[in-house]
Amino acid sequence: MKNIAVLTSGGDAPGMNAAIRAVVRTGLGSGLTVWGVYQGYSGLIEGSFKKLGARDVGSIIQRGGTILGSARCMEFQTEEGRELAIRRMKGAGIEGLVVIGGNGSQTGANALHQMGFPVVGVASTIDNDLYGSDITIGVDTALNIALDALDNLKVTASSHRRALLVEVMGRKCGYLALMAGIAGGAEAIVLPEIEVIPEQLAERIQDGYERGKPHAIVVVAEGAKYNAEALCKYFEEHDLLLGYEFRSTVLGYVQRGGVPTCSDRLLGTRLGSEAVEQMIAGNTGVLVGVSGNSVITTPLDEVVTGHKPLDPWFLKAADMLAR
Ligand code: ATP
Image (cartoon, rainbow, N blue to C red):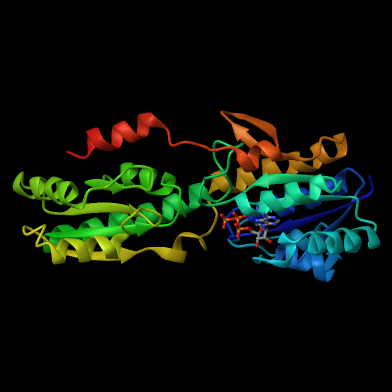
C-alpha cells in the first residue's frame, strides 16, 4: 500500500485534528502518501482531496473542530454514491481510507468495506455512543465544557434560589448527561435510558428545597423523552416545583467547539496513529478504539450493530449521591 486518505465525518469533535495529524505523520513516517479528503463523504464523492505534508498538519493539535471539515452526505447512503467515491479514490491511486467519526460515519465506512474497499475507522464523537470504544474522541472536552457551565450555573441558581434544567448534548445516549451530572453534583439527571415521571422528579427537587437546598440543578439529556424546555413547561402547566423559580438552559453547540483537553489530544493521537498501523498490517474493515488502557480493533459490522450500555454503577451512584 502506497497511498491512503483520511476524512472526518458527522459531528465535529475536539481531538479530531490530533487524529488527522497522527494519521498524516504516521503515514509519512511509514513511507506512504497521505491524502486529506475535505467535507467528509461529500468530498470523497466530489473528488475534493489533496496530498498532505507534515507541515499541513502543524499547529492543529490544539485546535477544536476539524481542518478537513465535515458534512452530512445523503448521496453516500446510496450504492451509486459510494461507487462514485470508490472510483474517485482509485482514480487518484488511493488504496485505503481512514474514517474519523461516529456511528453514522462508521456505518458508511462499513458499507465501503463491504464493497471491497479497505477502510479503518477511528472512534470519534462527543456522544460516546459508539460500540467498540470505551471512550471516543471529543467526549472528555465536551464533558469539561458542560462541567464549567454547570459550576457557573450552580452559583447563579443558589443566589436566586432557582431550579435550573440544563440540557446537554448526546443524541439518544445519556452518557454526557450522566457523567456531567455526577461530576457537577446535580440534584437530578434525566436520561433517555430511564423513564422519567415529571411528578416524581418535581417531588424529588421539592424535597431538596424543603431540606434546605439553595438550588436544584437538573441535567437533562437532549434525547430524553422530555427535554429541558418540555420539562419546564410541564412543571408550569401542572403547578409543580412551587418552592423554586425554574428556568431551562440549553448548552448546545458550545459543548462541541472547545479546545481539546490533554486526554482528547492523546486519544486522537493514539487512535489516528494506530489506524495507519492497522491499515499497513492489512487489518481493515475495523474500528480502532480503546478498552481499558489498551487500543483495540473491532470489526465494523459488529460496531454498527452493537450497543454500548451506560455503566450501571454510575447510574446507581447518580441516584445515591444527589441527596
Ligand atoms: P455524530 O454522532 O458525532 O454526529 P456520526 O458519524 O454518527 O457522528 P452522522 O451524521 O450520523 O454522524 O453520519 C455522518 C455521515 O455518515 C452521513 O452524513 C452519511 O454520509 C454517512 N452515513 C450515515 N449512515 C450511513 C449509511 N447507512 N450508509 C452509508 N453512509 C452513511
